[in-house]
Length: 330
Ligand SMILES: Nc1ncnc2c1ncn2[C@@H]1O[C@H](COP(=O)(O)OP(=O)(O)O)[C@@H](O)[C@H]1O
Ligand SMILES: [Mg+2]
Image 1 (tube, rainbow, N blue to C red):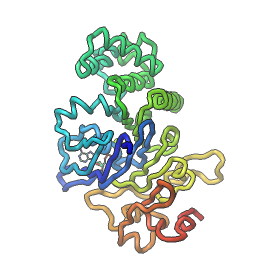
Image 2: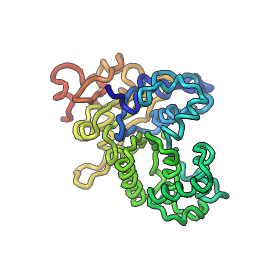
Image 3: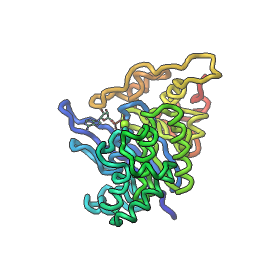
């Protein structure tokens, strides 16, 4: 049997805060095949970045708990000593484009020196080898070679973001984590970067975890969608199924909040705000904001229930025979 590229089982991460421990990721499981893209979507604070930082082992210092299983090509990752993780995994097998990364370039160093640094320091390449490789990567992300000589302030936001993606690919990772990679860019540039990412995924057979608050954007590149709410997956399934037959009321609200030209009604806003994770609501965490909540929802937390082939929803509406009928909007 072949392993998926990545398997995450019951991942739990909590942060220590002055007001008590905050469970940011609370039992998240998914797997990702080689060459596939998984989208993690949901409002700010859902725990999306925490998942990516846990996979890169770059969590902030105030982590109180990190538990669960993470396997990359069948090998356990969480138990790997730091030194081995740094030597073998980070940037070489799993790379990440951080939220707002295009603003993180050192302003006094040329782009070329910043792109070649990981190849020289981590990859053991000579300066000349690294330069040749950097030019290849710049070309791969459709940046002209002259960018190598430029300083960050001489590039547009979109060019900087391409350079960041080139840097993340420097050590030929199999898995690329993209955390809100286009959020700071205007819509046209965003569309160009998305096309670029789709090409890279196809041409390099790259696996991708695409993190965004924008479910429409995620649907553009993702094979699978995971909708996160308050540290948990609310819904997980094939992207077409989640978009065409969303089962969790939260997913439906996320989709209804998208502006659509051919729609009679204006986009809906999701009422309320996500809960304080230090004192989450009883039962289903979404119930205080859910238009379809009933009595059981405030008492008992639903598990992820099967609603279709590889498609699950953490909602009591999905339970029992006839659930698929009950689960569709009226
Ligand atoms: N270093 C930290 N210390 C305490 N709480 C944190 C820290 N980082 C993130 N959080 C909290 O963890 C939760 C999840 O955050 P995050 O993973 O950044 O979510 P997302 O990326 O979905 O916006 C939020 O409630 C956030 O405030
Ligand atoms: Mg985030």
